[in-house]
Image 1 (cartoon, rainbow, N blue to C red):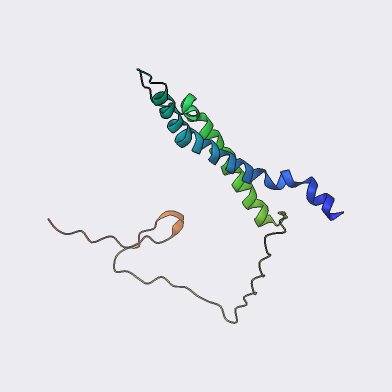
Image 2: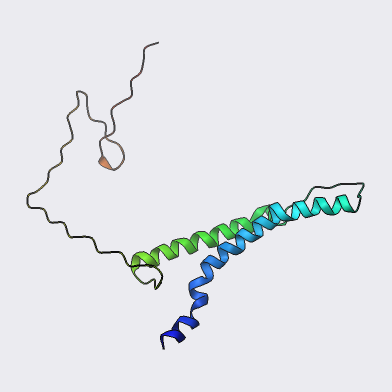
Length: 137
């Protein structure tokens, strides 16, 4: 029964890496392999008007790269959320040991050292760092 479950959801588990590998292959072909082959083809055919390779994925203002960036970014974010939520099932990833619980025997207090001037408050009500040294000119 476990073998059937393992075989039926391989696409669900492997589509993120497959998208990454596909994008890498497309980029290598469009920016490395095809320009070299284009130059060799023109040299072999003795073309009088030699032209430069125009990357196919940059047509249309590079929308392919924007779309793939969005797909891979959202896929990575979704995978991270799955791992944090505990719903990710991956037999090859070892489970992490649980962190020991921390109990405080006495209350801990944190104090901010006093400054000679008025305290400058930054974002979120936190004290801003002291002003940097300004040399006189």
